[in-house]
Image 1 (tube, rainbow, N blue to C red):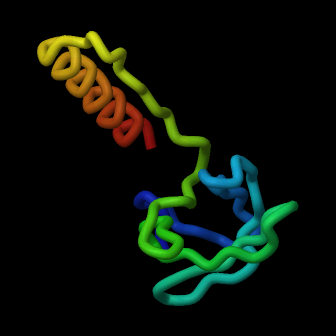
Image 2 (cartoon, rainbow, N blue to C red):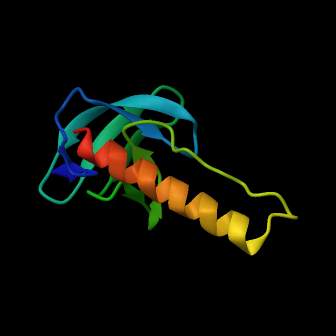
Length: 94
């Protein structure tokens, strides 16, 4: 099974967004995997990192940007283009 295009292996370290902690992949199936986290225990997720329909699992903590209330449409479009370019750079760095 892949997570964000990279093969998942037992023992890999993954991040749980809602709990804010890293855990360890304990088992892998064809369409899902299970990781154990220090305070929340076992969590089952699919290849998209979804838990209960919401993206919660990734390799690292997600990067979030919260534009200011006064951010113009142009500023938000520029920010979206910058984030898109950063994603492309990270994908090409694999």
